[in-house]
Length: 381
Ligand code: GLA
Figure 1 (cartoon, helix red, strand yellow):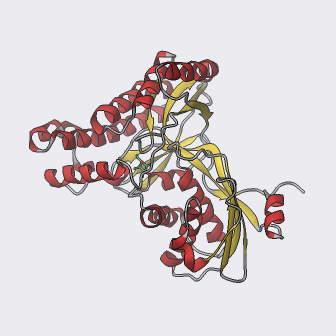
Figure 2 (cartoon, rainbow, N blue to C red; figure 1 turned 180 degrees about the horizontal axis):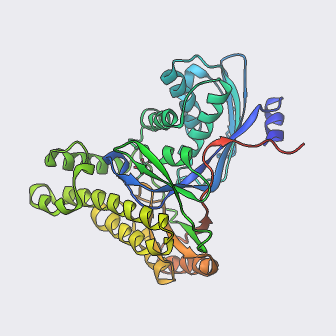
Figure 3 (cartoon, protein in one colour; figure 1 turned 90 degrees about the vertical axis):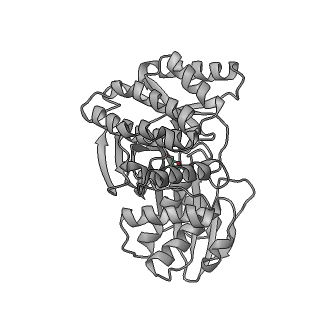
């Protein structure tokens, strides 16, 4: 990357910063409802090599789209950016505004092996890598909490996706072999050792190839339905509804709105159960809870798609301990918890069976919990 940067921009980068994609183990659409979620950073990263300039020019290049070449603009033109460069320029823009700093221009080269549009937060990885780079290079004082909020503002304001803070929290706080238990009501984050490696387990990502866009898709509709449920129930967020109280609301709101409520409340309960089991060293036992979570998304939250339902079904039939849609839904990927010893066989069987059921042949790959956003170590001389 350093060589490619030097060839493009005529000087070595000051450093390379990176951030992982994320998988959410359980707790979906709970972030903007004050619930719980349990994501982890994956061993697929977005890297950004950066060098500050002494003017306000910004030049960015990436391997995302062939033929984009170098995009040349200025710091104060961030909101004109298009495509993937919105995440880079948007991060710089919101960071400057929120911290009240001028900043200077920069050259940046982006390279990533986080697949885009799959539901593993390629966008949060890119924003967060840029944010940690600029915080260091501009000499700013901003903790992870501030950067999580800034990343969310990039999505909400610059990209127009009304998303919560799950993805940025996962990407910024991730640790190797840990998930992070996020409590969106308390604003807290607790590291939970997963112990997957020791238990001979791993997570497969099954990419349906059905693409989603949270700026235009059903994500915003679901968010409004959750707000409606909270309003009818007279609570600030659905976190205030106890699982035992859910059925009591059935006759008092539209059936679909009630189903959304039931998903959010029960998925928070599932996230707590899964966190407790892995903490107790019983990670094998979380499988059925993951699969229950999928049924809840499919039937109650209705954010799954047939190709992902098929992936979950065939993964479990092939021997996965549990499987579910991960991320915001309406496309994207399923995850499956499998024995490492069975992983290769299950990967092949799942791809075959999903294709045989009439869907696109999914791309299946294993992921392992990895380190969050950081400055990458310099290569040995
Ligand atoms: C997307 C959003 C997150 C969260 C999830 C669903 O990933 O970016 O904020 O709402 O969907 O859990």
